[in-house]
Amino acid sequence: MKLTADIGVAKGNKYREELCGDAVKIIRTAGQTTVILSDGLGSGVKANIVATLTTQIATGLLQRQVPIEHVISTIVDTLPTCRVRGLAYATFSILQIHADGRAMLYEYDSPPAFLFRNDRVVFLERTTRTICGRTIHESNFYVEEEDVLLMVTDGIINAGVGESFDLGLGEDGLMHFLTSPCTNWHSAEQLADFIVKLAHTCYRNQLGDDCTAVALRVRAPKMVTVLSGPPLSPENDVAMVQALMEGNSSKKIVCGGTSAKIVARILKAEIETTLDYIDPRVPPVAKIKGIDLVTEGVLTLNRCYEILREVQSVCEFPRTADGATLLAKEIWNAEEVRFLVGKSFNQAHANIEELMQLAPRQYIITRLVSLLNSRGVRTEIIYY
Amino acid sequence: MKILTLEFCVGTACHMKGTPDIIAAVEALPPEMRSNILLRLTHCLGNCGAGPNVKFDGILHSRVTVDSLSDLLKRYFQQE
Ligand code: FES
Image (cartoon, rainbow over all chains, first blue to last red; front, top):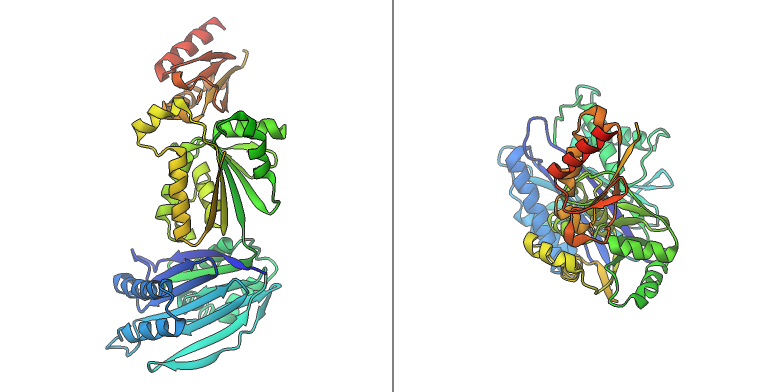
């Protein structure tokens, strides 16, 4: 069984701070997903720098396949210690989930991560280890599909300290909220958002500390099929649409007005155009029964590439529902993306593309593919 | 008064050539006029070279601009 995880990240800055003193990094490769969460001591610029430094070191080393023990010892060794408080400048947790379900968790001074299975908290057994004189809590366990893992910084555990609650929300308080029947959340993103909102409430909207929540929902890998562009010869229309429709587990996306017409004709369905120009840069999306997403072609693909290139984590996605953002999110969440690309050339677009310095369809798709490959997403392009 | 249907092409070519601006202009019409207009979006009308294309009461108009459309609208509403 192959497993992966949806990851939602939500953050809140301490009241009146420009920067968040917590940093999150997510590394996805074909075989594993790693989350690094670091909380810099204090708040503001200094905290932000140390936290970012910690996650960056870890990311750099993990990407070079350095074993996790060495990564931790390097971080612990590099972390400066605060002269006044005698504490390390940053705490961190690293969670690694392998495709076979094996999970490893390393925590240094940070609040413990939680595992929920069937809406219950599962106790994670931890062992302690001393690396370079610092105590690291370590836990090895297995995750199953639909498990939810939660990592938070202490801003959340201490939420409302001295105000709403004498001792803050606390781990138990947080668990209580999350397992109570009236909290419903469906995605990892929503859960993370919910927790940060909860912290806002506890702190009465003036966060007393930086707050970050990372939620992971374990699931089977997702596949997305994107059909874009009419085939060189119309005889191939049927074959191309069949390729799109095969494989029930895959999300089906069509990018392009003409492509949408072809798909609708072959599926004998109607195209319904929505009325909203949500983002003036991207033409509106449409609907075809049986297809998960129908967007315009070249502009949307170009914008989608831009979005994917810029965002480093889910929380950076534009919060709009324009075609490009929707497409980018689908692709972001997938472990395998298949492009069915029609090679027919639209003469009417030629001069516009030149004028707007837009990359033509085939070119932008190749760039998307190399971007995805560099992030560990498996891809395939089939030309028609 | 009869409702006037305007169908705007939002295919790539027409979009690039200015459909969003024209739609914005229609949305900004005075309410007594706007309320008589049914605004719809369509995919490529197959006349990309001459965009932006708008179907005005079922008739295809090409190279539409904000000004040319407002002229059309004025004439239409005067007739009605
Ligand atoms: S894009 Fe408007 S007619 Fe083709």
